[in-house]
Picture (cartoon, rainbow, N blue to C red):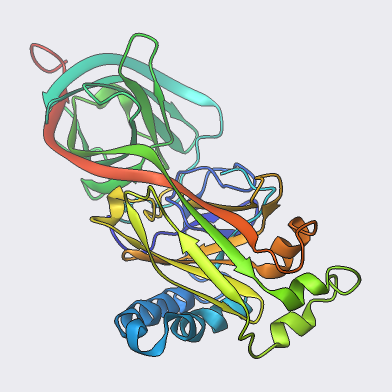
Length: 372
């Protein structure tokens, strides 16, 4: 469950920090597995390498100052525009699946209703139906026994066999596949579905096997902060639109950045920096990454002014338990333009994601009383 996860949006032609199968946070299109090298696509891994350098340097922060370490680790990635960005206009990733990109578009060519249940891991999984279309198959499942407010974000160890025990999926088992939808059912439990990019013979299906379910819940953490930058606040009148001086400024000995995370349960503030007009906040997961707000699954950062009226463009990047959030101080100053020159500019950082845990089981879903 750890490690960076990325998917490709075919509509935006951009990489997203999410699982294949999730909705694109910008256009809403279902995300696909990252295809092999595409012309014009930036090389992967540069930001992850910067993040690893940052995490390696964090223990030395007490000696050399975390601010300089943050800048040294992420400045090149940020300048190149490679950090994952969340903009005010945007709405709001498990081990990589072995399934290539999939779609659920096209006409339906067949459907079979099953309603076969199986128990395991304290949960009951019922195979409701399989719908087959042009180049895809959709498996609809119902899960009971899950704590209220949770959803199913992925299936592990998916295997489909015929009556003779032969695999109906190429390669046999799918190690992990994200769900295409998960929602509370009116009669209780959770309805969920997965979509494969291949056509199954739904009439030949005799058993569907699962080794695990990824159960997710939405989590949120809030970090409050203040920034004092008298020079920036003093230029609000006519020079704010041209902020090149801010990024070129080498030092600001009178500037003060303070952060507090009073009620944080899954992360802690590991460091901060304010250099060249960028506010940078380093968060570190408390406990397991996949159960924290830094889990890459549907992770999003929102930064607002003190009143919560103005939403500022912000970036978040990182994996393996540490993430860096960055926001431009000029935006914060513009949002707080009514504040007197010496008063702190207040802001709030909100990070939201899906915290996940694996429920291990052995669900062999077949026709009650024997094979069809």
